[in-house]
Length: 248
Image (cartoon, rainbow, N blue to C red):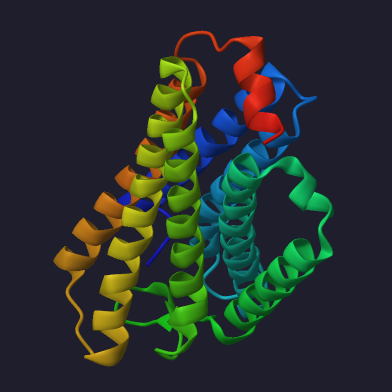
């Protein structure tokens, strides 16, 4: 694929939306740890989309291309793990950020995941398209897509449990939008991953299917952060409810 491919514009828009949403969330109250975690997860997610688009800016400098692709891969993994930490600590309590038996294993799994993804996911020239394409062994997709999707699923599970326990209707509605937002992000990754599996495992390639796949994945990645932003600004949460979520 080449940089002017229409789907790259979708990546750029999706990445920009996610980063803007992260800044808006952080600016709302930079003192809240959950805001910082939430905003950071969306920032890394947006960064992953932007650098995924920038990967196709070069067609000859393999070093630069692979470096940019690595940034995209690492950012996506970090964003997924930060989202999980956000939802987990919202449900269990912020004091878990100081628990070594939670933080250390989570960080170690994240490091292993992004390291394997960055090392074994490569970019190669694509003579048929006159550009470049990513390539990896099927097992590498477990680390590129499988583990991040698992972390996002766990994120939604903990958001769901939190939503069941809070009583204020506005809080429930906000968390519902967070859940929907991450569902769209999961959907985007799954759409992208399924086509990658078809291409790598079954040697299936169709420019039309590939184009449709990228468009739907990109639309999902754009919709996710927008839904979360809507959730952040629905109604006004009472001070007691904020304290209830922050310290459970």
